[in-house]
Amino acid sequence: MKTLSSLKKDLDFNKNLSSLIEALKTIAVTQYKILEQRMRPFEKLLSSIEGFFQIIDTSIVGHPFLSPQNKTQMIVAVTSDTGLLGGLNMQVISQAVTELGKMPGKLLVIGECGKTFLHDSSIPFVAFSGIKDEQRHAQAMQLRDYCIERVLKEKIGFLKVVYPRPVSFTVQRVEVLSFLPFSAPTTPQKAGFGLEPEVLLESKLEDVIEYLIYTWIGQKSYEIFGLSRLAEFAARFVHLEESHQKLKELDGKTRLEYFRVRHELIDRNMRELFSARLLYAGQSG
Image (cartoon, rainbow, N blue to C red; front, side, top):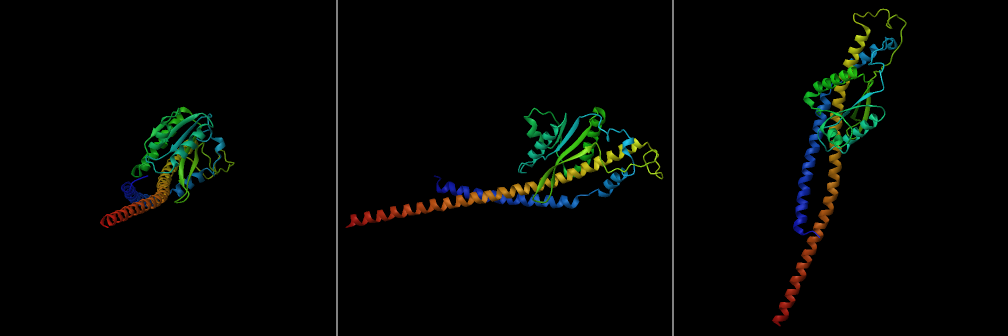
């Protein structure tokens, strides 16, 4: 049984820890709101790129971005640099490993948490630093350039990204997005080059397709990095809230035990005092 002083220390510790959790929850909410306001969707650009493929017949172009050259893949797993996410990073890694088991390939991990989870495994991987909000665009372009270089040099047929997406502020979901082979709605045309008659190209069609897909992957990577950070802040808030509720339950039990021990101590002192008074009265008589 704990002493009264140790129970009092536990209550003080719970109080201080509760204040710290509340502060961390406020920080997570603030970070989420700030990043949400700063997010810049590139819907017009992405839809324009995808719309281009509606006026060409990609079947006449044998580009590796459109037609896999072999059954190899690269999986990119986006994790965070910090914890307190309630297992979200582990879900990302687990899904990435599942995807990797579907065909031979390589694993690229972004973030310290992903590196930590895979450190003791037998799975080889390439590590990239975690996402920094102020460097998010540059990091997305760096990832894009690295992946495209590997795809072309090593003739990798499939490129996928596994990342956490915020369905809402309290719900996060791990999703898999296929970058390559690129698939957008296409409408085959009858023109000789697979284009509408009035469409003129100064560059080779293969070069145009490569550039547009290259740009699309860069912007989608930037978007995914932003969504991953939003999911990180949201998951941290949810995990902290769950921890706070458990702490409140523990504190309630500790408080009950504290008052029980305190009452027992008071009762014992009163009995001892009453016994002493009876003894003193008997000796006086």
